[in-house]
Image (cartoon, rainbow, N blue to C red):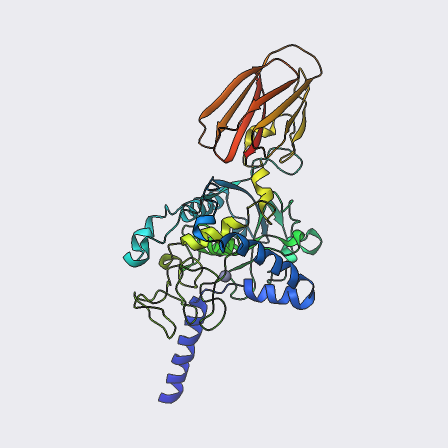
Length: 426
Ligand SMILES: [Zn+2]
């Protein structure tokens, strides 16, 4: 009887530990994709080669000028069957705050980073906004709510298709699609990795581990599941490389034997620890509890940002305007460089080229009627005005050769009419 009771207690203990462990579906999902469609393997390899081409350069050859803030417009597809799954806008907002804190190394718990790792903590200079403009150029809250008859979803992409009880992705070249739904089993979430099919590109998070607050499941109640999964979307691997003493292709995360869960004490030394500091179990790409994780490293930052380099997979996001609500006026298509606005009084067509540019840009502004003078202004991403002039001719040529490399905002104003576009100085 005693043995029997002991076994029961042991069993309960094992189940409890298992339920309390983080489970990310990304590796299994990626393997299954390749199994079903072997040609995808080369597509993933190309993405990896793109990242490596940027990160493997010597420090001297690395382009340090491309540290401009990268804005990622996010569309949240909320799939709900019961009211509690239909998360409030405030709940969504709590997740956005966590994402922006974690990706800018402004999370309050960075104080817990062990001193030996503290200098490796990075501000990725990647920021997230709820999309302000939808693919049709209409104003949006960035949240799409949809009732589903599905009891739950597994890591097999049904939530990404309206025909399967989910909601179709928005253009994944301009938006990060994030589906929030009831996940089957213990999986907290999963992400596509760079190089996957465009129509399933994005991140999936369980509704009960999304955002912060009292209705989120402990110990995954600090929004770190989304921080972790978006890390995968940005090309990061698990810190143990999904293998015993494997590699995550990042040189400032120490080799570690396997994943960690719960919250180990520091240092946690395993068989392949390179030194007495042991595992970086507090990295967002380990499996520890939300309250235990607190950093991305400089090496991880470089991997993430490599995807946005010229000709690389997520480069199109540098031209995604969906974070900018002023583009809603006139039904402007995000990302388009040729735009027709249709304000009440007057229409005009704007073209800005070349973009990206090294020196001269031409701003072409054709008016269909000719009344009010237009002002053209260029701001940097901090909102500082760098150039301002009135636009008299149809074509205005502006020299931006003296600008630092990076992203700028060009705005044309005509009374209450505004046209805004991003320009990139190469
Ligand atoms: Zn993961």
